[in-house]
Amino acid sequence: MEYIKQLKHIRNGQISPVYFIYGTQAFIIEEMVQEIISNALSKEDQEMNVQRFRLADTPLQFIIEEAETLPFFASKKVVIVYDFYLATSQKNDSAIEHQVETLEPYLKQPLPETILLFIAPYEKLDERKKVTKQLKSNATVVQASELSDQETLKWIKEQADELGIDVPDPVKRRLIDLAGTNLLQLRSELVKCQLYSGVGGEVTMEAVEQLVAKTLEQSIFDLIEWSMGGNITAAIELYKEMVQRKEEPLMILAMLVRQLRIYLHVKELKQRSYSEKQMAGMLKLHPYVVKLAARMVTRFEEKKLKSSIVAAADTDYAIKTGRQDKELAVELFIIKLGSLSAKSYT
Image (cartoon, rainbow, N blue to C red; front, side):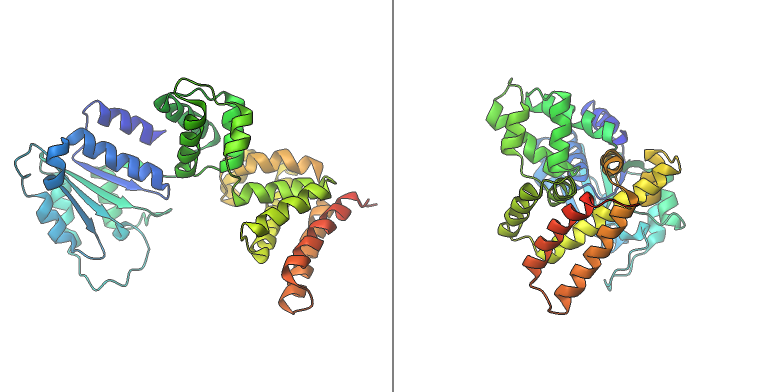
């Protein structure tokens, strides 16, 4: 877990002059920024020596000039460049003209008193661009991407240790089941668990079930499991709870179809002996999502999954042509999932 290693370096005072942080995990980005600031500067020095810029608003050459300026009555300064789209294929409507050529000389000889952070909150970089290659060659690179299953479990343990609570492994896994793999959401749920269990306490399975709100994805997962498993009553109750939470029925239907397609793809790839890691890469899904799907698809026949997707398309058509009320139509589809699962094929 590269970012954890970098956090340890920063906390030990080993702070690089230039960082390039990219990826979509906002928690990792914010934690890196805050750790660098708090370990490089005293609270008194932070007000005058932390400079924040958005690339869409400020020319890159101006930012480099600022990085080359000595700190104000302090030993260090931190310059942060947000939304660094120049290293991606992202289009930007800003009228600002950037003199990208000013970056390379600075990267080769950065000012020792400055810590310069380039933040690109994007999933992919444009590896063909010269600026991307320069940053990867001359800066400390931290990828703020989704963690693997094992990395997420390790991350939860580290967060739990920091909060002073004990979270057993089965409880960690249930926490991921309910809250998903977004680190900001997981951190928020761990804080709730700390408030409930108290510092030094153990977080129980019952506490997690009581405190942690299900994500939309987990609710969809349960809807399919319960309906296709024959527990229609529980599935309909969950659906009505989701509607009461102002979830849009058409969105619920779309998410159900997405999940059914994932199951179908995973089942097909599993039959062809692909590993879960290979499937995650091919389907562009988080490894934990594939792991859950691989566990579930053993219960479903391929024909049933295909029939369910066809039934969902019929439901969508009925809603969009005004033949059925959307809330009722999705409820009937959930009931139909149960009948499809009970149907035998020859």
